[in-house]
Image 1 (cartoon, rainbow, N blue to C red):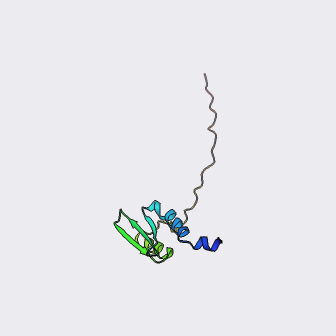
Image 2 (image 1 turned 45 degrees about the horizontal axis):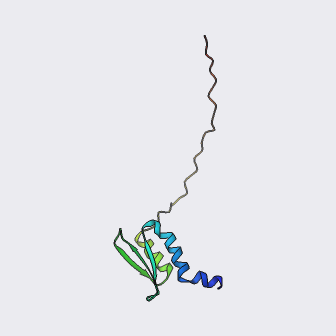
Length: 91
């Protein structure tokens, strides 16, 4: 089995899709009879399919876009820690 057959197999693409979209509430499977990729989101009551993994991912992103930041936040600068001054107690 070569790397090309592993990367092109439905099981490989299925695992990648599941790992990507499971946390967002999607259940994904590959239909052996239809040779299509399927996804269901019960919270949204949606059932979709795609001819390829890329088509299914595009459809999921159309329905539920990723929340990627548009801009990387500027790192905050923290002031260095300073030891409090020693106070002497006068008696």
